[in-house]
Image 1 (cartoon, rainbow, N blue to C red):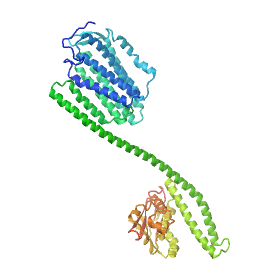
Image 2 (image 1 turned 180 degrees about the vertical axis):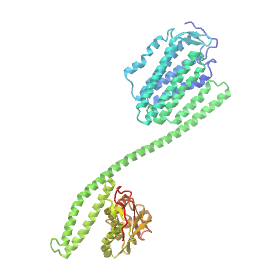
Image 3 (image 1 turned 30 degrees about the vertical axis):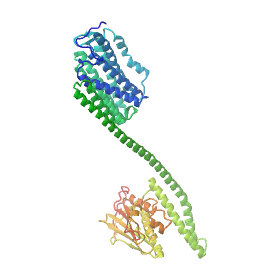
Image 4 (image 1 turned 90 degrees about the horizontal axis):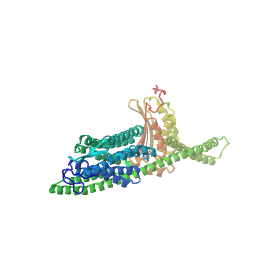
Length: 568
């Protein structure tokens, strides 16, 4: 084709011309630069990913299309317009094809089938064939050096763009509907909005130019690419899209540098160029510092997260080991209880004379064996209770119970032991009869027994006072076991009711304790909706252990017998 020149000077360096509108530097060039930089960045970070390759191809196609557009605005050669305008139409539709392909791969995380690829490419064949014909471009308008578009450029190419855009929307809606997790739905929505905004603004700008010949106004449609990149950056920062990690600070600094650098394309005043250059340099320096500090902080958080995950795994393993230990204790305790109970029975028969008269010296030995065996039975019972409590398998049977009678019976049982040790054991009951309480009498009896037993064990001389008091208007009852024994420090008081916990003072006085009695007793009391606690003025100053039980037991089964007042 013979060259025909439009009425303005030829461009310098192929794309620089006074004929280029200023809006192009704001709308097209920053989008080209940001898109290409982002595509390269994602590809470098995840070069094996198919989606990153498609994104790079899409961004490169848009960059090439932008260069072609700059040439068309700058040139005054009619033959150049015809050649590059045809290329521009082909590359433009190719961007929509790449967008559709990217959508499929982004959502499915896999390549599409060969049949789908054929379905996407097949509509392009007529366009490729007709691009160099008069059905695409019929000539050049020499007034503004723009091509006169034929039916292929005006209708078929735009129909393809709309077709691919609708296809993308349909895919997105389908993926949004089938997504189960909220995060996946959000990712789908953000990607869809970003890519559809980009394609629709891109197409609308070109359609405006083709049908109105106002190619300056059409440049406003090219703001879609920066918007799309913004959505992708958010997807990467928030959801690690494309299998990469990108800091928001990185994206912000890069976008700022590109936008400031793009000012050099249209600044004419030297002073403004110097100020813009200084601003650009400062932005790069401080941006680098910002990114470095944010990276350091992110690295620290990731390290903390790794430690947290490791601790979570270790904690889970400890729970499994604890469950295994509890199960073992339960099995072992069951196996031990049977022979110990048998020994207890035979010792009782021997001491009662069922097998004939026994010499005094042997009776003394049997008494000692009986005490040791009784202690072993209590240990086994405590271990069984602990395993049941930890496993949540302990059963409670609530029934109306006179607390005064329960406590008095336990105190009477310990009178011989107190007399033997020379300790004054006294009982104080309320003057008025208390209501019956809904209790598992055996469990509360065991808790009270443990407190009285401990008080006698750890009191070398002095007294032990067991009291029962009404709390409020008979709303609760309090059982107090006060002694003049070894007491405990404030520090020991904080851990006194822990499992297998013994204070230093108790270990000195009574070596064979297990540290389970208080733990079991507290668990029993709390299962009744009550509480158990201890007070002491210090080591060597005695202690007070208290149980408080509510009249209305929130743990009792609905429909149980209601508490009633027993008349004296």
